[in-house]
Image 1 (spheres, helix red, strand yellow):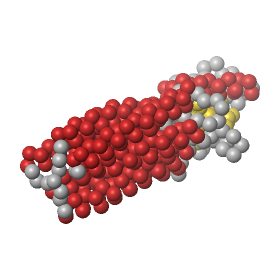
Image 2 (cartoon, rainbow, N blue to C red):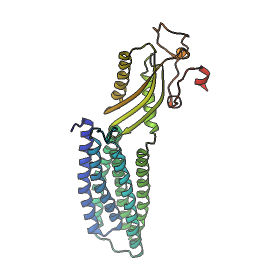
Image 3 (tube, rainbow, N blue to C red):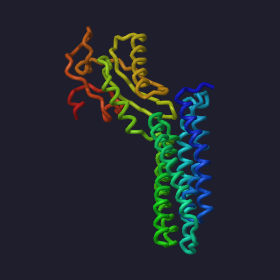
Image 4 (spheres, rainbow, N blue to C red):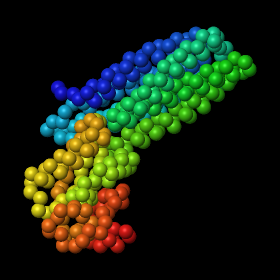
Length: 337
């Protein structure tokens, strides 16, 4: 099976995330067994989610790397949104488990032991999670991987919780207020809920093909900046990311007298431009429209022998006009309204 270097690097990083999640969970579980702290248990329970999400994410990126087939003509990239949705649900479940455990300990507090060792272990695991989470999040945004972005967000949240756990345990140690252990755990549970709902919301948006306005704006800005003079008009633009594959659909207006070979060269230039900017694989579906006489005033092509009207100015492509499903140029007033 063919896999691009992009796919291989995502898979390799997800393997590291899955493997490290097991090691960090064991460290936090050990810290809980020697201290009996429900706050540390909160951290350990979320690490169970890290382990499950790490291996689910690994399966997702492996499947997403598969080439498209007759049953999946747009590829398998959408499974990354499913993986992120499962991770979001698991985070919420972890928050519920923390609430249940913290409530019992708040009503029936128990003596905490070996807090120094427990805090040290949690600090080490938190630092490792933070470094890996920041790297995974940045890689996920750069490689357009929903799985890595969800993992990065979760790992960073876990790290911040670990830092807060250490701070809370220091407070318990110096005040001897045992009930603070459970109270702090409840606060962390609220933070876990917020992260879980955000991850779930973003993944469901991907499953429902909700437009990524930031990605769309990036594509529009690129095309406007590198625009060629004979790219007369662009409309009905749609952009969506499935795994490592960026799908771009649009209608482009070219001079009506271009032959098929010339139009093909223009489309390849457009695809090469988008691929060079975003990396990975780009699937381009462009419907070519022939220019009309009323579009002459916005056509910047200088050597046109068939010009019916003088050139006035190009219409700058933006979010509003390229998503429109009709051509531009009947009147300049229409473009400005």
